[in-house]
Length: 201
Length: 201
DNA sequence: ACCTGCCCGTGACACCTGTCATCGGGTGCT
DNA sequence: AGCACCCGATGACAGGTGTCACGGGCAGGT
Image (cartoon, rainbow over all chains, first blue to last red; front, side, top):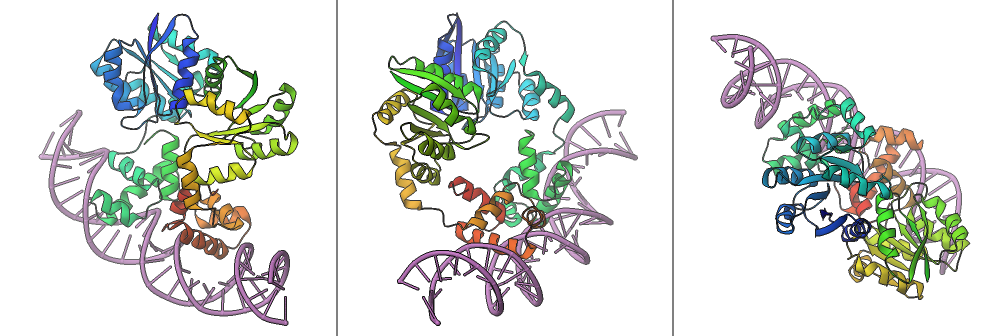
């Protein structure tokens, strides 16, 4: 019997996944959480062996949660699930110590198998995504560029961003200009969107 | 026995919801589709009584799919499900003839009840969302403003947008300026983001 | 010690953008 | 007919934005 933990911020999806996986005779959902920062405690308390982690979560995202699991409970394996196949996410998830990466587009029947393989110590990664992640390579953004792009995601003017991060307006423009070049965009908001699509944020 | 159709573009979520609802003795999932434009045909072929429609779908979104159902198969009731509570969506879903509106944050246990109520001819709408939709009111945007905002979503410069819709650059600027005023934003990309959050696009 | 890379800042410049005033044409309502 | 509203367009203007050159400081490798 494989003991499972589910982490997803949408209660309906979480409950539905639990119903799906509980149908399998050899799987048992022993914990459910809606926030990333509750994963480690819940995994410890419930004695989970495999954690299914959504990336988009409040508190702590799924990738950082996987890293925390790796650090605090090395015996627990994690399987990262996300809506879209953003190549950068695959790389970061693997680097964070996740044993698997599944997109929500995959057929429901395959999820249980993915869990079993992860539990058996195998790696489970969507082959298309793995190829893409190798082509795209890692994020070329520097720390500041990444930070400023996240602030540019909502379309704020440069002055607002500069005030939020306590930087000169010109410095913000310089960093964002570099980011625009690296993403191949022509506007900071376009650059922010592209970077997010590739999982660089 | 209530006959159900599920429409969601994410196969994993779709399958999981099917597993969840099939657990109920009086519910039966008779069809599953991943695109909005397949809903009507599938509902007709399967004899579904209630359709669970996600809003974000390729081909046709869930609201337009509800409208198509209302037109083609008036006896079939629809329950719209979406990730976030965007007030504008509630109003549009109701106007499109949907009998219910549920967010994915609601507990999984309540979904089956929502389906039963919709099947019984009742309206099921998240009370918080209903209140918000009344406060916010309908979209103040004109047709062009809405169209141009959707093109501004990805952060494209004005020149690109103007070329895409075959309009003068100045005209685009004027419409977007009006949209910026109506959303309370200071930038077109911020306005686009706000409009999308409120379900105005 | 040297080089490289990231960080922060300034200044300047061309260009883009948001705003306003103004015009004409069309539609729908009273 | 008058009015209100949306659409498309133009021109002008202040201010925002992207780019470049340049400077200095700091950490990490060789």
